[in-house]
Length: 596
Image (cartoon, rainbow, N blue to C red):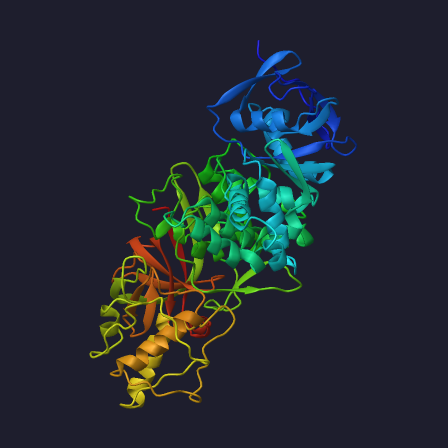
């Protein structure tokens, strides 16, 4: 008979620990027993690892009865086992009854406390080569001043190969690593049959930005035929170099509730991975000073993501989630299927494929707090509490706002992955120009100009104003996350539209200066009232543009029937992004947005 769990006490500190019995030989059978203890007073080691393939199961003994563990955990136990003394471990796959949903909910809710109370946290990287420690030593030396002299004393190639092997591991891509390393700084690396006793979470990850160029360059050199996109190394780089990277989290924990949605959003594109979609939310809730929402593994991914959006929206009164739903509504459904039947206006927090970022966001750091903000204030300082109706057969949201205009003309989609120019040629015609061809055939080229040259035309003030608006629209009226284009007439260089070289040089410089290329993945449009804009990929002539209270951008909605709309996406309309519609005498309207 397989091992059966005894009921865990319903007290705040109640956990199980696995007492791993000693063994003289590595291949001796693995055995141990479970103890019911309090994490507040018991000394134990918490284990951080990748679950791995659940189909590769090994049998161990718990209190003399068989218990199945996956291959990766089996190797963890073999490696951690002492030859003489039993050791007390907390391992989620063993210490939590995974078939008991109520217990699982309660234990995951307190997981941050479990890791925080642990005597140490052991991070298991997996089986590696014997010289793995050389790679970690190289990593440490790279962030020290004497790194060059150190490199002269080691086998250069083997050290780099060992370092790449260290970083090219699934361990670094786990969503739980954020919580495990941020909560407890006593994280030790463990690999193979030996241990590296360095503390890695704070010292290593916080220095990643200083050494990433050397490491990534060496990875490319050692893997000339490998694809960077989607590689473990690329995911490690994306996670560690993210604005919300793990190296910055420890001194900020606990985070505030206001930072819950920004942290979730920051992980959507190329962020950490989880085998269970629910863990994209539950894997970070322990980082916050107050409970954001209860853990409930009986929920579907759709219901959980909708609940998160509703909680955050009601707390903030803002509509940021409509911008971050981009990955759900802007992709080819045949390539990126909507696996969880999520409405277009809801964020799919499990989305990990690279996609176009929302209309420019500015990262503002006040005392190192982690806050996303936007340059735009299309709805001024307004806020509203959205009315969500979430039922099995009916998912809608009801919002208030102002009708602004309609989409008149829609251009081709700007796609940097399948095009050789920085914008489609029909955008020139939409802008009202006839003799400007799309420049910058090699969009990766970089200009060596030392300052941004403003633009004008030689043919008259009217053309100058039109070209100015056209450029502003292409770049979303932003040069970077930190600067707005200066609208004054001073300090402009004259760049005639027929002078292709001048426009191309300007374009090269701007694409270098621009951190978020806002027009990529969007369509240039002209409204029925004559304004230029950037529309979402699904926009069609006749779609309506609204400013919704609490929204920093404008939104395109398609009408299904009277008063009922479907969400198309966010948009940029020149001259309407700073609350102009709010200042006009427009009649407030209510809109009901359905799921499809």
